[in-house]
Image (cartoon, rainbow, N blue to C red; front, side):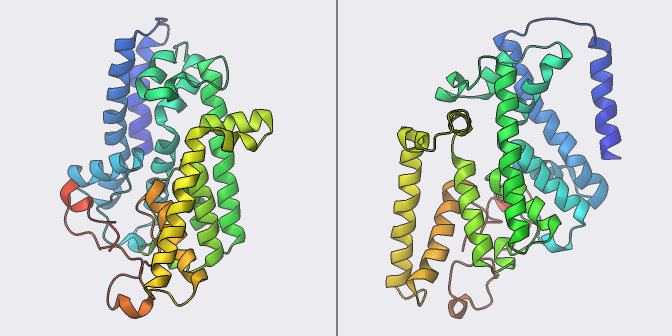
Amino acid sequence: MSLALSASAGLLLWLPNLREREQLSVRDGFLIVSLFWAVLGMLGALPFMLGLDWGVTDAVFESISGFTTTGATVVEQIDALPQSILYHRQQIQWLGGMGVIVLAVAILPLLGVGGMQLSRAETSGVAKHEKPTPRIAETARALWTLYFALTAACALSYWMAGMSSFDAIGRAFTTVATGGFSTHDASLGYFDSVAIELIAIVFMVAGGVNFAVHCLVWHKRDLGVYLRDTEVFAYLLIFVGGALLISLSLFMTTAYATLGEAWRYGAFQVASIERSGSTSVPTRPPAAQGSAPASGVRPCRGAGPAHAARCRAPL
């Protein structure tokens, strides 16, 4: 039903303008990008409203949180949701991870519409001047190809580490997107696996690197590009330094018995905070957890931004 309504709305808007050929101005680009997020928020909310009988506020909040990879949620019992809704939550966060506008830029030339103004309106800072390929549409397609390949590699790694195919794909969507939505209440703590957590760390860190740099590494076949790029070098330095500091702190305060265990949780939390934020494993040793949730996150009560912002905050 949600797909039919979305497709019908799109066709009603597209068919009357099928033969129009106009170059978008900068102002048009900003307007379309703004409307893009508003319309996407409503369309993404349809499965929640039609499938779960949610109100508009909760449904739109969950949808916008997904598309913007914020990670806040109003769901109290994720494990109780049907797989169709779980997949929808994971997928909208994956689409938002690279940017739906970038996807639109990749396909708009096929419809006779230029995408440069949309790209300029969507990106900010130095990112808008970084073009791995001369044409903006080719750049967008290159970025999405790399994004898809990274997601596929993450999903395969999760599956080989013991996840079900559904969990592996769902978790890969939000790991690479650095969003944090999960298919379980306990997030990655549900699996209690060192291998899965290491995989998550690698792909969370990779997902946080500028994808223009990833493209450059791929084209040049030179991993040294990562270290020569000042932004990526600083990012990796912060991660390593933060992980060491937190791990040593956990070990010295006897939160964990061994340095290896302290590193396991410390490195994961730093990677999560640095990029994903809401993805969590237990942040305290079992003896200190008491009746707290196993994932180290607070259960979400109520609806709306004020409640949902606290929903996945680490204890």
